[in-house]
Amino acid sequence: MRYFLAALFLFSQALRAQNPAPLYRPDSIQLTDIRERLVELAMQNPSYEMVDHASLAASYQVKIAKSAYIGLFSAQGNLNEFTISKPSYNGTQIPYYYPRYNLAVNIPFDIFTRTTNTVKIAKENYYMTTAAKNEKFREIKADVLTKYENYLLAKQLVELQGRITQGEYATLKRAESDFSENLIKLDDVEKAQKNYIMEQVKSLTLQKDLNLAKIEIEKVIGVKIENVERGIK
Image (cartoon, rainbow, N blue to C red; front, side, top):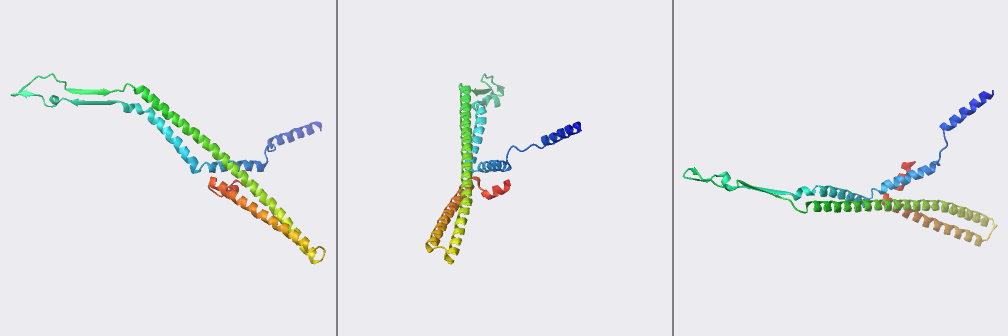
């Protein structure tokens, strides 16, 4: 019996090891996924595409600079006119000592320094455009995540304020019922009505803030935030 219990305990531990508890809550994983998706969408922003193309163009300039030394060489040549038509007098060729052709090769003295410096300049321009690209990536990432936090806050405030407004509405209805039964005075009803209107104003203001937060984040990601949220679920 003792060995049976021991074996049963080891078997249960093995099953538990095969099904470990999750390290993160599902909602936290979902929140991480939506943030990553928002950053991906924000990277398609035209402002980031411009610095991306600038960095790519700079990389092409480096390749051009490395092969620029080929264009520094020049060669030219010409044939002497007597090479084509040999001189003669009364049918007898006249000996001549002119060169039959001329060749010239032009090699600049600064070919190595000029090419090296041109490549260095192109590389520095590439490094600068790459740094600008990375900086733009960080700016856009921080911007879209900040706007998303503002959107989440505005959304939660609207939900909380909605509960408060509903509570004030219920209070107003009770006050009207009590007034109809002569349990309270008219001033109490007017006070409840005033409180309800104030909470309605707060609800409208917070809803406006939520709408603006949605506009701001959708301007960066280029799609509706609700579509992103539905795609993550």
